[in-house]
Image: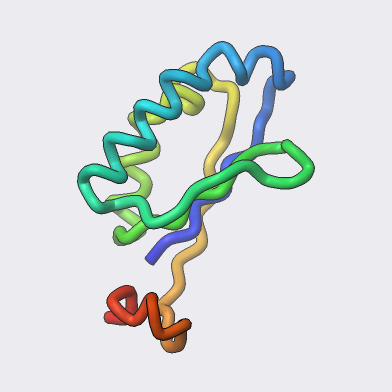
Length: 94
């Protein structure tokens, strides 16, 4: 599992130009069952995507994000192996 951290590198007005395209990108990978959860960071300096992917898959998936393509955000990745979770999320334990 991968936690992808997006950090905006351009003003929010520039980021918002690509928000609809970014949401389509998210929808695509939710449909492919690669994304588990996503949302804005608070304060709004970027976002977070929880991925069901290897590091290599996550890096490849990120290349398709309009935020990265248009250089308004940068990605960093944190891999982790969940060992415990709430009962309704046990299907995420591998």
